Image 1 (cartoon, one colour):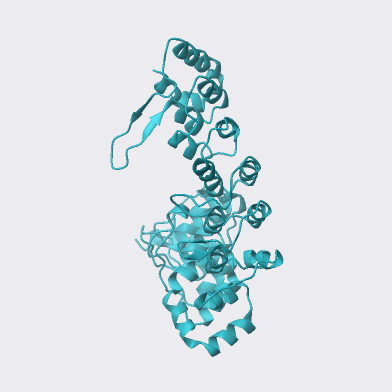
Image 2 (cartoon, helix red, strand yellow):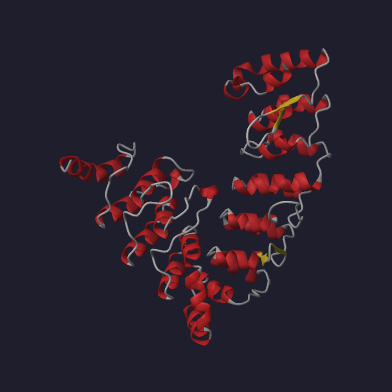
Length: 373
């Protein structure tokens, strides 16, 4: 019964019932209910869903989390540790940490999850309460590597450096310096250099970093001296072009195109950002809401009606970005306008989208499409 109580949707959705839930949970615990009660789910990846997972990881309910911990719930519960950071209301997560019982592995995992949520304050609190940014986890990247892969803002990267993160540490054969270059994060490379961290890179990473930092002189010098590196970059172009496009690095995208990476190059995708396999950089730029990069890629021959692995066009993604993404607060109709001006078909595009400025652009094209049958 305690398990069902803590996993109740009402606990998460109806704050007016909190006192009732707390009273019922207290009564159950007083009657001998196990605070570590749980059950195994079925399916391909079974998980043990406990009462603490429900309280801290689903409802993010601080009072019920506190009650369970006081009655002996294990704060190292795997699902509670993983899911409690999935919010910017960090009260329940803090209670787990404040027991002083979390393993270094789990504290590090919480920090990783905060990078998934781009939560500066949450990451700061964890770093101030014992999370080690250089901890080598059993699975997954170092915190700084993860922050770069998740395109965290520069202030979060600075936060990690302030707490001792070392960009020179390697994981899976690469340092954070190399990962920043490959992701197109010229701003991160500049930050590292400003902090006195040497930009020591080898092979193609040197040319990639020059593109990321918008350094035409270095690009020309390396390309002229080592043409094999240019060929390597072209061979890796699908990933590089898409990831540069996704991090606002329009200048870097231009340099990659100038080196010979085709605008048609395909990307393997990134599930975290819902970027499908066989996306082009134009799909990525449209989905991330980056009009300047969209304009550049169209001008350089990116196919406007190509579909990604989920059957979505760049126009469909540009519209979706405005109304159904984690970045709707910076929405603009500019990418939609650019794609329509370039002849993109509105077939399969959400209409009406609910965003008046985009719907005004789409309307005439939808009418013409319907008239053609």
